[in-house]
Length: 353
Image (cartoon, rainbow, N blue to C red):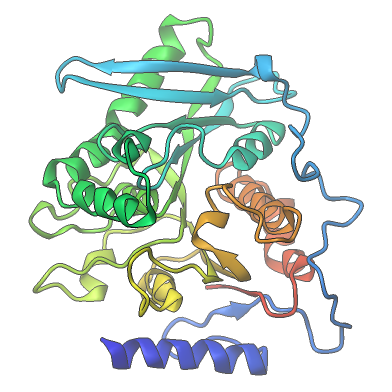
């Protein structure tokens, strides 16, 4: 495995030097800034960028955010949610589900909720009891936080609960679209999903990743496009990398950073988070590796000292991706594949296949 990781890291280093295309198998097209363009030291938002400035609400007022709880009586489980209402939409609007990481909550990644709402989506951020912020209660030190997180991961039922939260929530949205004041306003033929860290694992499961004995039973065909942020590679004994991703057949945007480490593992190589992108054979796969982005960047807990520029870039890319692959917007697809890379810093990596 270490040899494989060294090869992957070497491949990325070579690509960064050459600004070239992916080699072998299905060709991947690079999105790096062409060599003839002058290097720009900071990421560009540009005058036409619709993303809000860091720290703002992006035009989304507080009364356009709805919080509540779904109750699953069959499982004895309550699922808190936060819903960002779409702006300027006259007809049914697409829905994007967000699944938080270990120790997170429905309040994770608000920058994405605001950006999605401004772009005309329902941003539906759900909370997973058992792996949410309540597992950190009483922790006073980094070691205690790490210990309590590891304890939550080791409970088999927590993963199953997470993976089955999604179909339950989607069922509730179908009910909401018929029996509440939002009736007819949700376009449930166009549902996307975003997840960070453990939430990325939940997203991969919904997209069709196989998980040992359970296989692909958690794949949900209602999810049409997905964005795993900081995905983890999980390969059960007896399975190959190719085998665990064979059922994935939807567009996916894979996002990580050069500082995207793992708590408690000093030897962890962030480039392992690119393995799903490298391995999945379905079309319309995208990869963004942001120079300097850490694991907590994507949850919105820190700005990495850049004033929020990295999160603005992530939000812009997510909206372009969803517009292209959920809404079928050809102009967004063109901007995604031909123009987006020019907004990146020189050491960022963007490619697709």
